[in-house]
Length: 87
Image (cartoon, rainbow, N blue to C red; front, side):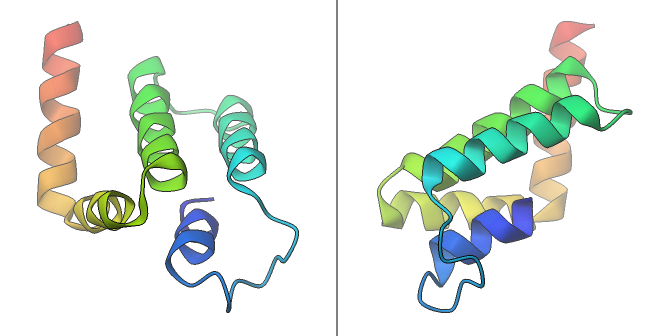
């Protein structure tokens, strides 16, 4: 779902699913996280937050969020800190 969201937002003219919308993609992400085992509530919250930011923020901010998600060390630091706060 992350790749589909990025495709829709980053290159809408080349996106292979012409009927996609921000709301539909957010619901698909939410539903896929519910159905997929192995994610904690925190993981789901962080991923849904990322998806909401990419899908609904103005383009310049959404692109920054997409770049952060691809910066793996930063994403791991963020999730690690969030997990420590809930523990």
